[in-house]
Image (cartoon, rainbow, N blue to C red; front, side):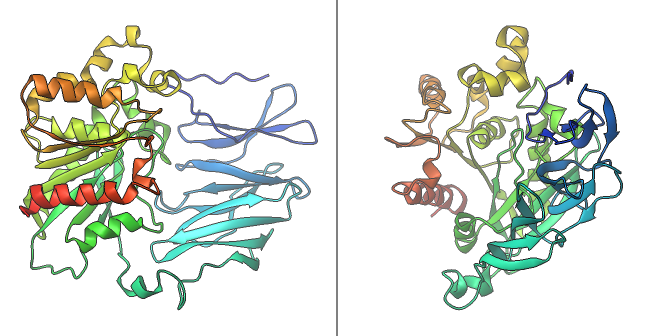
Length: 415
């Protein structure tokens, strides 16, 4: 009935929706962005339902009585997400059901006519309500109002206000960044700064959403936090996401180095006191950045890093890198052990849960062994019994956070 091909890779989605009239909805990036299409039962294309230089974030539901599909998308800006509806019988301009300014997700009733939606922004913790089909709120499910009695109320006045901006990648594509300034910020002072990185496929770090409580800890400790969605990140065009196809550890590293150069140029940032931290793909990125020639980073904390992609699962790795015997150069370039001679002695902290069944522990032990053979000093923090999400552990998450702070206080502040 339908075959979807791409010379790079295909992203899985949940946008396939069979309709009672025998037709079906389908999501595809064939025109350069993820959009929705309608097909007849025999696989004949009837119409492209959505169009534009923006991707559909996902089908939230279908209201067959009104012949509309409800979906989430970042039409106005990748930093925001709203809920829209559009007719699949007579496609036209999508109608916004929710206001802008933050991030919306929704779940539409199986029969249509209503939906539950959640919203958050940098000043609004996640709240959920029931909405009628036209987007009017019927009642709160969980208002979570930031008012007296809320756990965050004592800190509401000092919630961080992100500053957003853009940089241009080497190929001309727009990248979005976010800056969080220290508590009691004084523009006349210079502050140490930490780049918080993920950098891998799918993920989007920069958005107008409720901010992580752990990041606020760094702000109160006097650090600037910087985040950049490099090429390869999600919620963007196919070209933006596929820039690292078959060569992970290249363009996304270049983009983060460009971001660090911009960060160092800011008048309130001490260019000699830059750190970088990340977990999982962010740990890989931290190691790539710390071993880049003339790296601007004085210290890096790499958590659960994939250090050799042949050790990671095939469903993920081979989608983006191909098979090892078909891309030997790409796998070798992204092998951290081949870059360790560039590492500045004493500037690296390796962290790993010893029961990690996602990025297996061998990824870190092979780097530890190689560094020891080269007599390059480094630090490590291991977490027995913890799997891949050690920073979110109920028993050891605070230890992970404190270890990061203690490390950066020594390396960037000399404390």
